Image 1 (cartoon, rainbow, N blue to C red):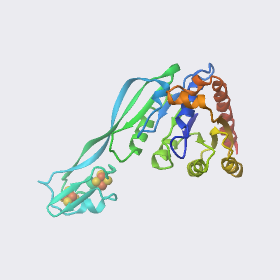
Image 2: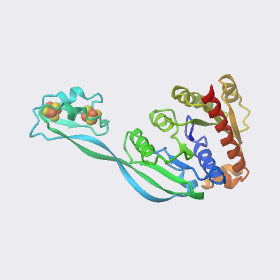
Image 3: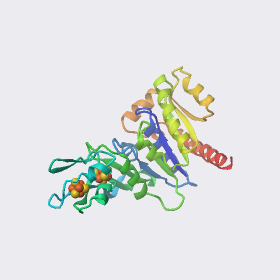
Image 4: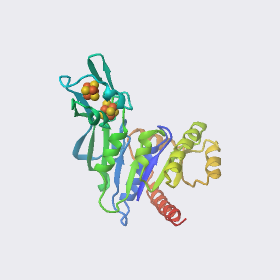
Length: 291
Ligand code: SF4
Ligand code: SF4
């Protein structure tokens, strides 16, 4: 069972929920510790709550072109075949723009002179180890200034792929862009964390579309519940999205989270609530598979 936890924007409590779910499952005798993937590679912070000790790591690199100008005839074919405008021929020189390159290899394949070779451009690192309660923890960390998170998310998911049918909790990046889609792709269930405000509803709509387009069943957790705003409830009712949990607006929770304490440590009763939520997710996934 792979459960992706996402939210249309940052600051809604997505990582609070993802880490609480992982810790609750790790504490269940019949389930065992899950694998936790922190796919928020631009700003990973699940380690604050799960305290992993990293035991292994690996660089993530994109293969980008390097031109041997002693072989180049400046024919311009490499620039013509590059869809991303990442290579340009200007007079008697070939310019490569690594920040635009997607590492597709098309320029190398099409160079008639064999003047291009591919060299690694390190974009970030993958790290893995054991975290609290025996949770297997893995994350990607993107180098500052790198423009593309998707290759790091993709490599993280491959590198840390669990053996057997272990439960996987995926902490997706905030937003609704390509890195979120890459994080959520292949999940059995998408758990969307939102807050009952007009902004929360706006971002929930976008994140919900990702689940729909990928054909993944969706459920919602309303965090900081109790504002009186009903737009989120109305939206969920209209689209038949189950609201699986409500976490109230609570000063003790907010202060504990700000100090880096997991939700189930601040309020231990959430351990049972998240284990019940997992049971709900299993039922929904089974129902969807039958329909
Ligand atoms: S395709 Fe090859 S030969 Fe032509 S400009 Fe590019 S690097 Fe030079
Ligand atoms: S590897 Fe692909 S994206 Fe990069 S410069 Fe070559 S053609 Fe463009």
